[in-house]
Image (cartoon, rainbow over all chains, first blue to last red; front, side, top):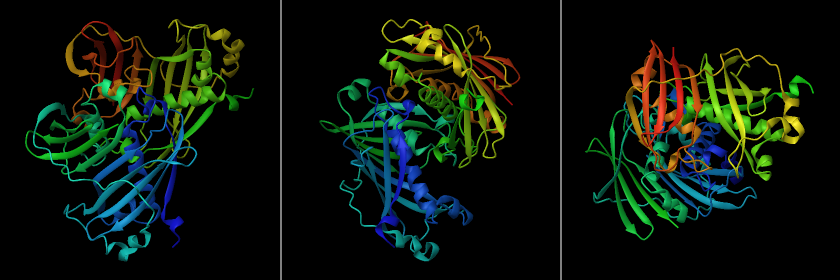
Length: 247
Length: 247
């Protein structure tokens, strides 16, 4: 298969209600587009959720790291390319490039996914999925950003608290992966976004949370412009960990 | 001008992260699509924000009423038609039809807009805008739902409170019109959405709120399945009023 065929390209416009007060696309909306592109790309190649669901399997996002040199401005066109970098037995690495209206890369993203059985919730073997056909899509396109890091938060300041509500809950009955991104950004005062922009955003999805769960956000500053965040549900289990680098 | 020309039609798909746990498009996402369609339609006809901004004018949404017989399901295609029903000196009525994948109407919406000068914040005379050219687009397509009603809330139960955060703030520095819809739906327990669906949703935008404002939500039950909601900022000024009818 040609390398061209392995890459999916999807076009977007930065909608007026999807930008922040700086007129730049929000990280949450970009994350949503990336996950949609992952879905489109997989579906078009026969290993998407709709196809898997017939076999009672579903994709689960484990890690997401986004690094942007620049965010699309309101009303600007941009596109997202996505491809599979690696397939292991239990995980697959999927990368993204975000291109501006001229086709110049303005950022990249990396993600790690597992596949689980919806009946047993146990991970499935990706190398046997459709006789390993997913491996045919492995593509060696460059993704010049660091891999998702190990985030360790030694419980620190409680920076915020949120009770999971109707709008937080997704199609699977869990708190929406994208909503965590919004809630984490909301820990910072508006002033931060006036002076800086989010350069890198990492999410590690550790466990699911549900309607009514109390989410507590612990934040630890790890550098001048760097923060590690841990979200626990109901004062016990870690749900997500995140790293934010401003510039 | 033919009636056909006066109606703008825009196509969408219900994205997986834009549906709720019932796999139905959320009212907030639908509202976002409607406002975008209003923008596209106006822009294409020479009276959109980008055009007006050159003249330092902008559209301000005053009322929105949405009535749905059915919400698009995850991955379903749907389309939105929009047209101008009336133009007065200070307001214009813009209507919408929401069509399912087969082109059958599954809902309608009505909205009322004013145009203001960004310098003086005073309303502009729509009948003189571009020599009254907006009136050429008045279209008598049927919109078989009731007009936005007068909502009166005699201050009742405090049903919720929210401090306006980074993600709430839009391109104009105000709390995003769509975010109010989400926060209002979030006043209701998940159980409500399990048993019922939102049949009609009305919003009256009365004043702007800003980053850091404390929003207090007062809710009054006015019928078996009917609620009036008032949102005040900082314990004083009314910001929005809303009516919700479940079915």
